[in-house]
Image (tube, rainbow, N blue to C red; front, side, top):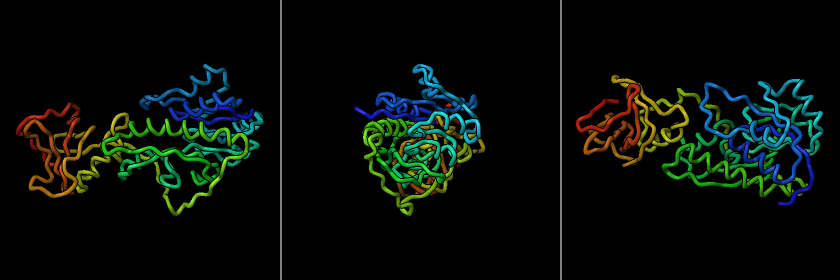
Length: 304
């Protein structure tokens, strides 16, 4: 890939941040400054480190709790960069930062915009049973994820894919999207297509409590929740008389139909099944009850 010489300030975190920053470096972009996050000790850190990549390449890196301060704004302005890029950085960037570069600010978002604007788009796409998602490079403004689209790269969501499975694909989609478009962006020839916001919606962040299972839903809906919040996320759960049930991995045996066993978790013939009130049958492949692995044993019956 051959790119014109250009400079950038980069706000980045997570695997998307590492891979997209790597694309800029491979493309010959002079990265003046990187802004990333301090890892949260309460969070499971299963992803690569933007900070370590900066150390390896000798790039100045800072980790402010809030990027929208006069001190950070001054550092970014002093870099006198052509571009600002945001790659999975978790904080909104306000106008003084976005306007501090000469040729525009661009964000890599983990969905096919205008669908799934906002937070945790991969998890939401799975919860809603989507069969496709991807990555979108778009121009940034003060409103989240609504700037003009430069390029997109789609990936499939298979019926049993977990959020981690899909996120791995989205990381690759983001890298390929930026790699394909960067030469045009630097040359000033990249297309910019305005979004039709009526074709999508904004989604908010999620917390552990949002993993609570609604047994009035059907097997497919519960399966989608399980795979959207399974490890490394807190998991899909329900509080039963026997203790907290955590479902980590499931498989849909039947999408519809209400059986006489609805509202039951039952083991038989070596298979653990859930018959939700909403219909269908769900096989439980990995679960915990009251903090211990749930063993498949004939005769096990738990009301939901």
